[in-house]
Image (cartoon, rainbow, N blue to C red):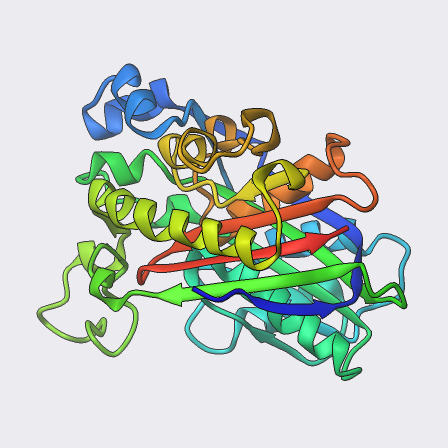
Length: 327
């Protein structure tokens, strides 16, 4: 599996995140899914998750404002979220509106839970081509809105959050995106789904059921399929970049589940203290999970200048992706 060695220079000059105030513990959730608190934690690794009372555009704008800080407005806004505010128009439009901007080009990059990695690759190419110099990437998801309490394991995974980064062009060719890898395996297309909301099961279709609009996942089969493909990708990435696990300063994975995050050290060969693990207090926040973990690491002072950071994860599809960043 070849990694695309890109060497596209940029710096992340701003990080932002939003965690709702409301906390739902697994003990509180247990009565809704008819399972015990211990069952939830043992299956998912999630002790508590956040519940948002505001929608994804407002959540994303709060994170974006923190990332922007006192910097000038971006040249481009990319929404990299899992589930949109509505089908049309694009969610990036609503985020821009909440930020009080007008006239900034904006669009979405969507590859479910790994949308942030895809957006980084797109943004770095646009900066490298000098199309844009300052790009805002926002990931915002309300995973709890799509919970199906008749599927206890997937329902107990999800949480709400938003995260954002502000990218700027730079003259240091050692900074930015070093490599990017992505593969999609459509034989896993039915393992993680929200079947409704599109042309397949339209709301006006009499056969459409309420459960078609809720999140559905076969967690054990996803894990089984992802484990083999992801670790092949990790091995290829390291070989292609002439690196070992010890050369990576920080691993930032999609917070798919407690078991999935721990697997990067247990099976992936990375030292446990290098793997950012926040799922016990946030849950799986869909596409916001990975940038939320990155921003959390930044504000916890775990990211230093010239660090090599490995972003990696899985998404519905099944799609796997990774990128190597030089900070």
